[in-house]
Image (cartoon, rainbow, N blue to C red; front, top):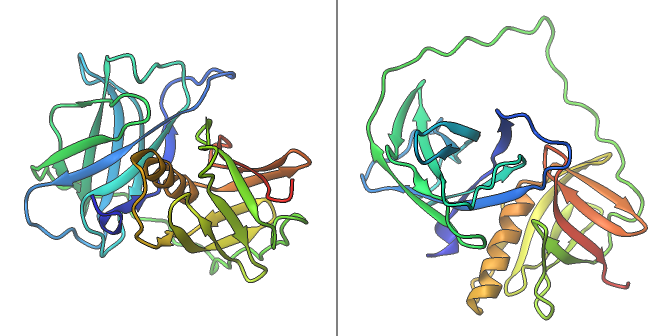
Length: 265
């Protein structure tokens, strides 16, 4: 599968179960594709849901917009933080691609969650549903102005960071990815195999990254899987925590996605 054909979908976690305070996060990732040669509308959305295999009962789901010029397969990463064991053989994933208030593609039978460390591949069928008129947005009384950017914490920029963990899994010892962010917010490093560059948006303790553009070298499967997980995790980052122990990049729910230390340490 060519990395250039993957469209990374940034999925914001929507929990519909009570989350235990000490629950450990589980990252499920994979791809969604469909066989019909139909171009996706520019307003297409992807929704991925973790469900019970027996009755299809939803456990957790997330929705994200699909880039207008994206090609299938569409890559996704779903952060599950609950007491559910997603890898116990009783859970599956359902994907929906929707546009204009109706579902266009869906897999009617949940796909069992792949074993830890493997991708779950979902094939959706073209089965357009009825149009549901969305609630029109309320008009603001005054034009909304963007929030001013706040300076980042000292030490974040112009430092070469070495990745120690991705999604709680230790980085491969001799192929650790890196990351550096310049003062003009250009970012880049190595994914463990390929060099990459992207752009960071930083304001205070908030940070996000655009899609990574990388070279196309091939390495061992374990290293390539780690690099793929690293690039997906970067796109899900929403904030960071920096202290004497190092740098942690967090998702929108505050769950650590990537752990890093200064390359000089």
